[in-house]
Image 1 (cartoon, rainbow, N blue to C red):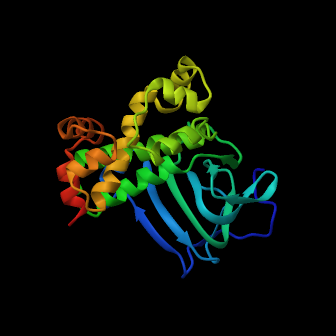
Image 2: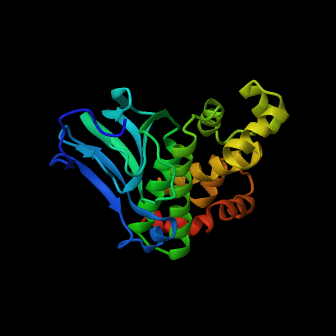
Image 3: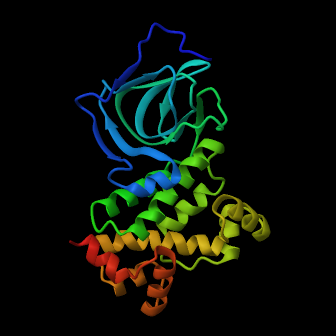
Amino acid sequence: MGRIHLDLREIHSIGKHTREWIVDPVSCPILKRFGITLAGISETGKDFSFVRHRPAMRQVLVSLEGEGMVWTAAGWQKCAGGKAYVTSEDIAHAYRATARWKVCWVVWAGSRSAERHEPLLRDVDPRPLAAALEGLRLEMSSRQEPEVLQHWVGLVDRYALRVGRHGAASLLWPLWEEVRRTVGERWTLLRLAERAGLEPEQLRRICHRETGCSPVRQVTVLRMQEAVSFLGMGYTVEATAQAVGYENCFAFSTAFRRVMGEPPSRVAARLRR
């Protein structure tokens, strides 16, 4: 593409009807370690519009809800929920809302050594990046512990880079959605494989490729993520343990701390303040 083949001036318009949460290296210095200059979540109005002819940055923008339009080599294309717009340094790009549009995004400082490419529109699973940004927002609005912030920023960076490099939706989406809906049930490797329509070894290979861990470990991670929601709704630690499939509260607390980095009682206290 090289340039936008339209009579468009450089535009940076957030619009008066857009609400945004933005984090930068001033408010969160840990972003600098990952080369991130800005990240955020935007709920836009129709006047949200950006045109950059020679951007000195790379960006991943993931559509969560609603719909916007993005500029690619094929012209303007719709960018609805489950789509990502991936841009690089020095190559023109443009995007705009057509109605209400909720997006999350990450911007890195440009690097002359980074691979340049035309803007890309990809199918993605938007949930990991959105969840990591929501986690970072929660920590930024509460205790702002450096060690916890480091974990959240690392997840934001990793998930955004995954979108930029691969983009493809997870093959195991339906399975993990079913696990979330029935998180309190007993999920064994054999049952997971049966529900996914795969042999256990196939499931293990795909799960390791997509998540970096085993299927049973992934179930534990999902249980702990759901446990945070229960704690936020006012469940006791004991009730939360039962809700996510643990009969033994001590075993639940041990697993929660291993996955989330802190005990459930501390998370519960922070969420209820």
